[in-house]
Image (tube, rainbow, N blue to C red; front, side, top):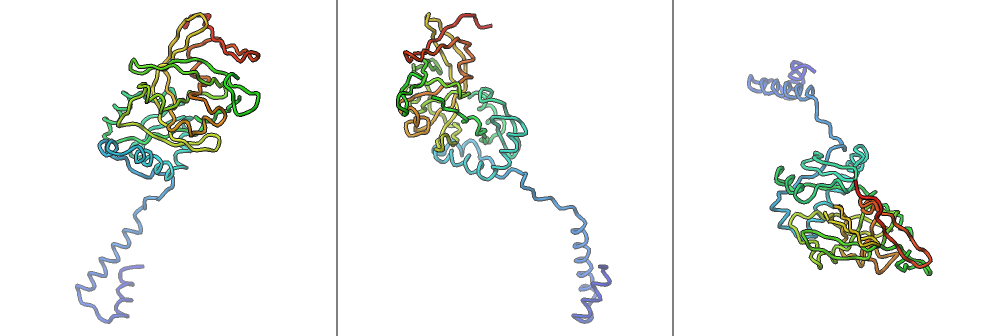
Amino acid sequence: MTTDTVLKQVRDRLGPLNGQAEQAVAEAVEIIRQMSERPSSPITEDSFKGENVSLDEYESWSEDQQAQYLAEAKKANATWIEKRLQDLGAAWMIVVEGKIIAHGPTLQTLPHDEEFDALCEKYGKFPFVFFSPRLFLIEETALCHSTTTPGDAYPTIWISLKADKVGTALEADFDTGAFDAYFNLDLLTQSGVIKAKKRTVYDESAHLGKNFRYTTQSLTLEIKDKSDQYRQAKIVAVCVKNWNNSPFVTINPNRTALVGRNAISKLRPIVSLDFANHQTEVEYRAPLS
């Protein structure tokens, strides 16, 4: 519709217009025309929703507030997160201001504490760290720790965990149906292996239909074989809060750790299961290359 047409319709409704009124109508018509020609920014559900908070703000929060920070971002961006993890083939990714600044195919490629701190300082914000649910696809095939099934037992293996020269020994359930390692966060905190940090990332997931809260931790895993030979490997483990009420004790109520394939394969032992005597034997034959 032209300016003259609009002016005629306005005069027909209101009567004669003075010069100032006609100029105002003409300006309004021009503004509307320009707005209709301007390409609009499409609103898409494919954009990330939410902002990162400052480091100081995050560090001032309680554990519950820190967990809520990530939980709200996960809920608001569930489809976005799922698609990005799938497209990248990633087990985890780190997001700042809607942009993926790091990602990796396994938990073992997650930045260590010093690397994560460096990212925090670089961006001046506390990142969102999103994990793939497949980290908790544990078959829980159940030998050597008694389980809730009569006559059944779970294979166990003695391990030592260390961080900053503080260590503890654990009899861990060994499950080739699990890829990563899962530990009792409260137990490792009490033993001094894990120390409280202001920049801990707390997330929540589910296993065997039950929710749990966890954080990841860089640890040194040590296993001794039957000839008292030791081997060590750096691993990133899932450390579960309130372990004794978590789904990880559903099958074995006395469990304190669950160690999967990846942690053991780093040391390359030969593991023999003696089903008759409910014993697990570890042996190192060839040196690590």
